[in-house]
Amino acid sequence: MKHLLASTCLVAGLLAMTGAARAECGDVTIASMNWQSAEVLAALDKFILTEGYGCNAEVIVGDTVPTITSMIEKGEPDLAPEGWVDLLPDVVNRGIEEGKLIGAATALSDGAVQGWWVPKYIVDANPEIKTIEDALKHPELFPDPEDKAKGSVHNGPQGWGGTVVTGQLYKAYGGEGANFTLVDTGSAAGLDGSIAKAYERKEGWVGYYWAPTALLGKYEMVKLEHGVPYDAAEWKRCNTVADCADPKKNDWPKDKVQTLVTKTFSERAGADVMGYLNKRSWSNDTVNKLMAWMTDNQASGDDGAKHFLEENEALWKDWVSPDAAEKIKAAL
Image (cartoon, rainbow, N blue to C red; front, side):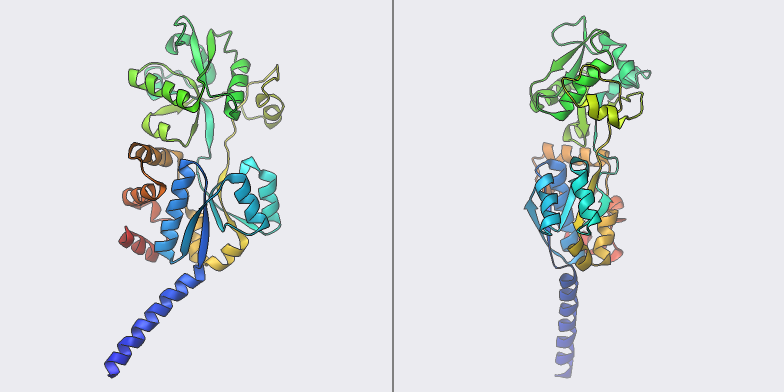
């Protein structure tokens, strides 16, 4: 009987410890934005917080502006893994200054990158091509689909901010005078298709794209340098204004993509959970390859998160405590 009571007390004690761990972190709502990289990061955080740290994590649908605004004004959701803070810097800064938001890890260690890209095999064969100006010296390497005597710069669809900037940089770098045309690809699918077609035929291609994306995980591309420093005033005055007649050469700024946490959650989550959220950061190359795998396998965010954890232990184990790492490995 004494042995039975001792065993019962031991089990009860262990259950109480587990309950305490869950109670410390408690319920946590994680915003999953409506694009692939944010979806898989939200799923990854849910898995690690649930399995590694005993949280009761739930993923909810969100989008950048309403999610961050709600975090400041209502204190929910608790966590935005992929917060594009440069889309509303004043709002984010106000939330941090008022003590309602905490900035955790930089989610994308490289930042979100936009610009003009060329296939890697073009650079391998022509190592002198490093900048936009270098590429514009060689219209023969990037033939226009409609007129092989000219080169072409492929642009995104109308309505995209990147499309406006590409059109302005085409003017600033003298694309027309360099015997290049600016090609309207018509849609996101048209832009992707133009890259895929060129890559599969090993033909030249130059134009607008961004990272992280699944396409760049499948087709290895090189971003061209702009050859000048970033000028914020010129960027605002003309590079981002479609009808501005005199755009100047300019660098394309990277967008800061940061994990945001409500102050209330940071206080109740505990040092271990916040330690993870302050460390968890991955590169565009890592995300590109993961999204390419997800696209090829028609995988969900949950599937992508598990695939990442299974294939990249050396990376993620440094984000978590040794105890959490063992629990995560056991849950896979």
